Length: 142
View 1: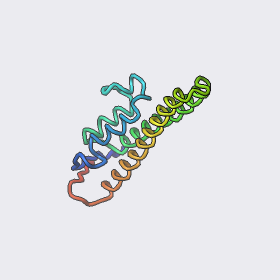
View 2 (view 1 turned 90 degrees about the horizontal axis):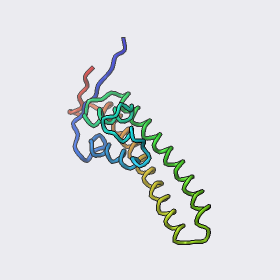
View 3 (view 1 turned 45 degrees about the horizontal axis):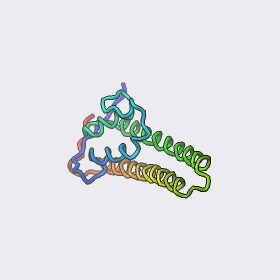
View 4 (view 1 turned 30 degrees about the vertical axis):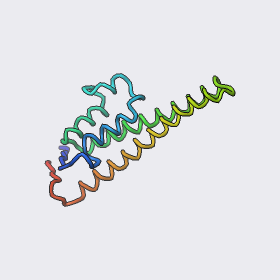
């Protein structure tokens, strides 16, 4: 019989376990999500994990599913950046204004990807710190 541990933490809006923090990670990359992945009631494993974590009743498997989902979106961002760079080089020629528009979009996607990955690392680190700590407010239900 597999034993599953469900986590629930006291949290406020300022820490990486807050619903707002998780929404920020997701929304930095939402433009790369499919329609199913944009649906908040989707059965997609990453969205389902996000609901559980935001609801403050989740397992380590939910954390891993959300981490994997964010990594997948980040990979899509990298692919999109390469596509846009190729499109920019093919279509803009020497037009500096068109190149700047492409460069702005590319920089935005690259920045959002970097922020989402950084925030995801902070979320994972904070989660592990809470699990390993004896801080009152960290409740574990087997």
